[in-house]
Amino acid sequence: MMNYETFKGIVENEFLGSMGPEFEGMQLEVIPVQKVNVTLDGMCVRNPSNPEQIAPTIYINDMYEYYKQTGDLKRVMSETAETLKRCEEKASELRDIVTSDSMKENVKDQIFFQLINKEQNKELLSDCPYRTFEDLAIIYRILVLKDQDGITSSVIHNNLAKKYGMSETDLFQAAVVNTKRLLPTVVKPMEEVMREIFVSDGIPEDMIELMLPSLPNDMQFYVISNNQGINGAVNMLYEEELYKLSQKLNDNLIILPSSIHEVFVLAVGNNDVEELANLVKDVNMNIVPVNERLSNQVYMYDGDKRTLKQITDTPNRSLVDEVTEQNLIYNQQQSR
Image 1 (spheres, rainbow, N blue to C red):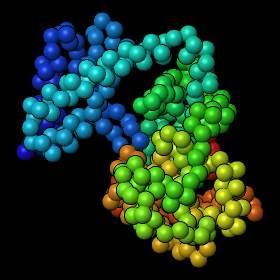
Image 2: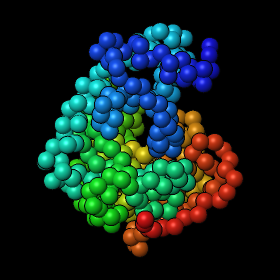
Image 3: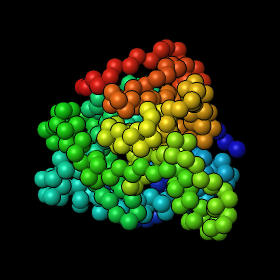
């Protein structure tokens, strides 16, 4: 089986030929794309007469993972070509939305927050308006489309913010209102979340009862996300939701960053913070995909002071590997 660089070279040289006659005269472009926590090899097919036009991106990294599963290069190329054709049809629809007068007029109403790891995303943040919270960074996205299939959104880079004439403060003020309106906060007991999963999998109710024994409120994990379950971890920064849960449990709260999509919350009680930090790290490294990891740290919400802060400081715990060379420096609520 060929290695990644060999595979990438073949894709660059041969992929366009698998797209069919309707793509004749198009150009294949391969560029590094900064995604959350990772840099990927993005590939798109552009019309050379309109190189600035929005074009769907396929990631060669994903193609290679599929190749490793199947061992069938021809199949990977063929199926990816069909996927790209379908994406191009969707992109045509999105181009109409993005360039529409209504989008230009209402762009401030479509801006929302996303929470990512600051240290792991230095290169991405160098080209984005953002502000920091402990070891995390708040970036901004624009909601392009929301339908029955989910949401389509894009990170707001510096050039787009400039195009819209919006400073980081402008973006923040818009997003702090829009995020909860566009993607409402959801707080659920883990037991309820698991029950919904089991029901959707067709597991009988009596089996579910055996698998999910009832726990008192102060022993339960709670999940904070949004109604789409996408990029919902940022809802941990809406303090009023934490305050309500703290009052319900009659205790301060520990927040565990499950992923960029949600966080887990439990009462402080007698929990060992370092053990919980080790649990978060182990789950990140063994279960959560790299591009969805948020942090290996643990946070605490003080219900009396109504403050949220990081309570572990483990700079050696990178989101990608076990060791980094330098300590992290945390600058709370600084913006650029």
